[in-house]
Length: 358
Image 1 (cartoon, one colour):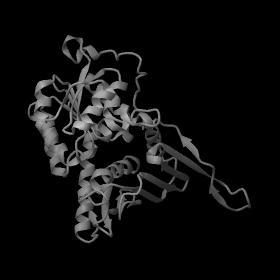
Image 2: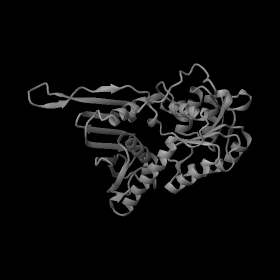
Image 3: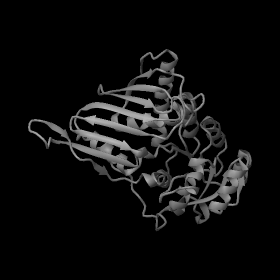
Image 4: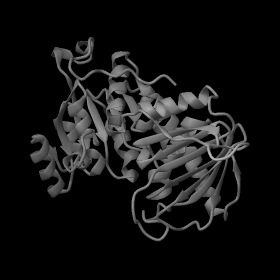
């Protein structure tokens, strides 16, 4: 897969003037100032861009002008850190009083559908919505939004940033070009809910391995640290006959974050460590200790930019707006497919692990 074009961040992209009247940069606002909305950059320990607020500041062509957050403490911290004084505590006031061109939806998962629908019903000057996953809590909600967006003049995109980040793009290229050989075994690990983070795991595995044809939830079914969004173990079957086993690591409680994938092929191994910040490739080599055996060689890191992955989404949205694209963006369309699969996994759990064909 060809990775996305990256602006160098030093110049304003040619053509941005045609987007907004009066030669203005795109005015952006954020709904929800929790971790991904702002806090991960307010409290970051390493260099990078880890939030939507950070992306507005890092990507040329955008201006962060306001936010919506009911928690006064979080609103105050946002104001102090970013120097943005305008923070509303209600959605209607936020949308009515600001001339926004881009809105980022970082509210709790169950609110995404309602907020995006509210925007699409009366978008005003809003040209794009960048939402956190999941797009909606059901496939029907996602489809309803797709229908609304198709005639709205608004672009909808989902922050599944691994689809745009260079190292993940490179792995997809290796696999699509059949450079790793046949799949032998795939395992993956996640925490914090099938719908909250499990959908991201489904999306990442689909990006790498293709479409899912069957699913099966694995017991125990009602476990996890994310309330009623259970962290279900599950099996995904793919079109080529391969399968992936995905296991949660917060069955009794949340102990630590993990989002890791281990892929074994006839031609080597690919491992996604540390939330995808480090992806390693091990080729198959002659075993060094005695003849007649083959083994996995020393790992080489696939170069990437996960510390700034979210900026690739904003650059992509900017490119799409420059091309006058509206409706669901590519990643939003993929997010609808993810929700079909996640709902099928939940249905399998409700049926005591029945295998479900898609």
